[in-house]
Image (cartoon, rainbow, N blue to C red; front, side):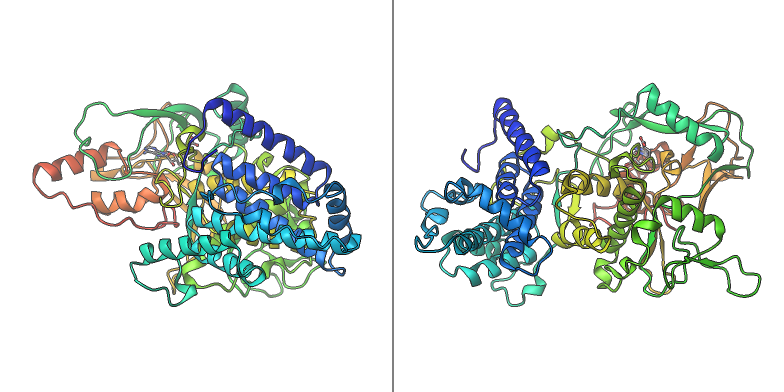
Length: 580
Ligand SMILES: C[S@@+](CC[C@H](N)C(=O)[O-])C[C@H]1O[C@@H](n2cnc3c(N)ncnc32)[C@H](O)[C@@H]1O
């Protein structure tokens, strides 16, 4: 298939079948670097360059395992390569990459000069070397397609160091440089570190994801309502219709009817009085990026002062890990701590460049979810804190646009992605937890991690450091995040270890507060004191679009009538959902 073509339904189904069978074969032979490369090729053809990059990176690690006798999986990797190359060099190494338009490239084939006099050990090492070149090509091109130019360039450079004349790598280098010049608007690239490395990938329920529940089914609603009984006794979750949000300002502010879509929301079952607590939630799906711990490891609240009567307790097994009280310690032991006890995992991605703080914080949340999964022996997407939350997914079909090296990632790709935080970082975390990253592919494959990230990006709240203004603590409260946003909210929230939502005394314009039975519980994801344009910019990150609540539409329509509307400015990068 030509790289610029999109494929038909039938071709897509064939590719999905192929993906399924190669994934199954990886479950049987987890150290099979050839199968990883085969799957990378299928993922590329399906239009998932991020998943292709992950497969290629795992294959590259396995090439290193083959080449280094002292490495942990050396024997398994070499034995599997021997099985796969019994009949000669595996097919996948004969083919040039699937994404490049490679009519005039001889890529894979010319490099396959295996020395006929080599003994079996040398033959395998030569094949592993060839495979590593293939990995570099695939990583360079796939990461370029994701928009991660610095990482793409680095893999390309490593590949060219090993195979200086490789045509495919030379061509990839040209593409990367061309794209970088375009994005940086410069004539020459001087400093590799200046290359952009933050990209975007598809945010969707992958066609093979069978963990995602029907969020509107009676089973889901019953489960969530059971959870709400203790946390928000006067509330229930219901299916509701919400405005379909647009990317930015539109002319629809004074339309009577706007398109809507089906989602969940929180509703009052009984009247709730002004000032009354609506919800009180304790979540251990929390993380912080402070280097020196002064926060509870479980709930990330500030630790009370130490001293004779202090409730603060440490983990009996590991140094320096503190909890605000016995309750947090015992929940930590049940829910996540055994996976990370004495593993020094808290040092991963803590001391990062300020520009990366947001990504690092999401990685810490991901690490907590992985520790929960390992400790509870539950697939990460089946964790009760994760399974039912909103992921702001787009349909696979809408994402499946033809890809071309000359085009930037299509705007519809909405999940932030980088090699460091989506691929290398999570593998580092798993290795720190002593997890065999190959044998646990079903649990910790990149599509699983991307699904977790999609859910966290739509729902995590964060606290900023008051001195630096950088986000420092993040948490997902799976019940609190069922409440939808309105710029005239009937509740107010505060998070300090526990998430508290209470009924406002007064609404916007001084109207009295209070929520009647049957009314929706309305939260706020931005500072509601701001003017409409600024509110909409702020809330855009967590809402996924331009707020269309009644207050925004009324105020924006009035401003437009009076000629006060502001031009569409650059978007505010808001990790910090709703912090004010
Ligand atoms: C934290 S979740 C809220 C719960 C979500 N509705 C659900 O089904 O679980 C945030 C998402 O809800 C939707 N949402 C919340 N408030 C909204 C509003 N005022 N208008 C449109 N969509 C809203 C957006 O899609 C947003 O990304």
